[in-house]
Image (cartoon, rainbow, N blue to C red; front, top):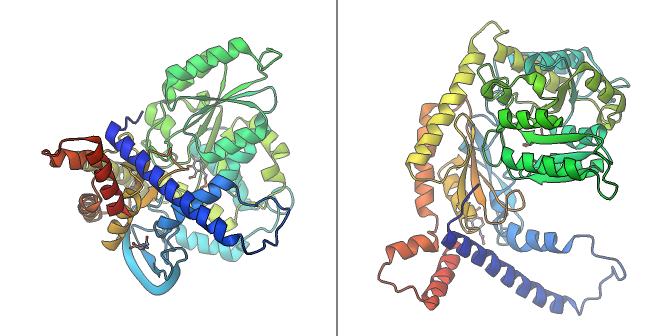
Length: 500
Ligand SMILES: Cc1ncc(COP(=O)(O)O)c(C=O)c1O
Ligand SMILES: *[C@@H]1O[C@H](CO)[C@@H](O)[C@H](O)[C@H]1NC(C)=O
């Protein structure tokens, strides 16, 4: 659990409150202004939802230069970020011809396969020539190539399950599979911080959804006991089945799943375990086989293993691995298998080749070196950040490390200041995180060198000291100020104005 300091919470709420108030104020005047212009959409309900639309216009648009920055190269350790300018206070951003070469701390390029690779790239080009960019067909029609078959065998073998099926998109893998394996009368128990693809898959399934406190096995057990005792709503009949859904590494927290404890509880209550390894497969474990390998869990105890190829493997798509029966059933019934175009052949080849490198089947030790490197880099970077006094979330060995920013003013300030010094960082805020818990998320790669990491640390410290201090820090410094209510409010307004 993140414990947010009282004053930080106060100033953060205050900042959002002020943004909200000014936004509403301006909207009010805009409405009066627009009153005279007859609307030609008379009788229609607004197509954009009220609060989401407000959030986008009045909060997100003010700092949108920090998001969706166009890139003009492969997402390697360093990449080209296109410079943009605006003539209307960043409401619209225009691209220039200029690029800046930036250190990439944002891509999920854990093993460095996202850029040209001496083993993978020539094979991917060959497959592009042989199979073309798309199969233009679904898997059950003309969309299963020899590459798709090879890929599924390769993935099943890599993750340690009898069979696997692959899909063209990781997001769809979750959102389309959950409705196939569970429905009305079933129960999904989901970690409170599970990815949106899981949330939407669970909602679309029609099963009852219960949430347990993030990564807290004791609470999972409590929910399981209560739900099993209670049974289905109204009828109180036993649940048709229960699936517990967790992630290997939580992408916004950088935390490792407490898998051994969770698996033990699920066994005790006969609930299936669904494990999303999007961020952990390839990135952790001695041979890159994910959290099961890292935490010593037998893959036979995880019923449904899901993962994506968009991170460690430098490709796209997702997989489900499980028993032969389960996979065969999914191939007969899953709409994403039956009705969606199959994964692009060059993308499939990229996955096959990168797994071969990881396993050392390319005849070199590059895979093992990459795995050692990502571990060293991540642990070094995390410990340095902690030494510098940053509030860093997550566990050792995890390449994802969020630095807490909290205050909305700090989001653009930190991001822009880093970019000025050629370091590209990703910042995340509501709705991807809870409102108060905005953060910068650093993703470390095996392709970062020691110099890269040292530069990153230097720039991050500098940018952080530039970022407007929050009230608590100001109060600490200005000790002679007697903290009356009036002063507090004045200081908040000053800090707010400094931020915007
Ligand atoms: C845990 C988790 N599951 C699924 C996905 C979706 O995967 P993709 O980006 O490959 O569609 C992501 C994406 O970041 C993720 O973090
Ligand atoms: C617009 O974005 C730039 C950085 O891209 C920033 O320096 C500037 O302050 C922003 N302007 C406003 C009005 O937010």
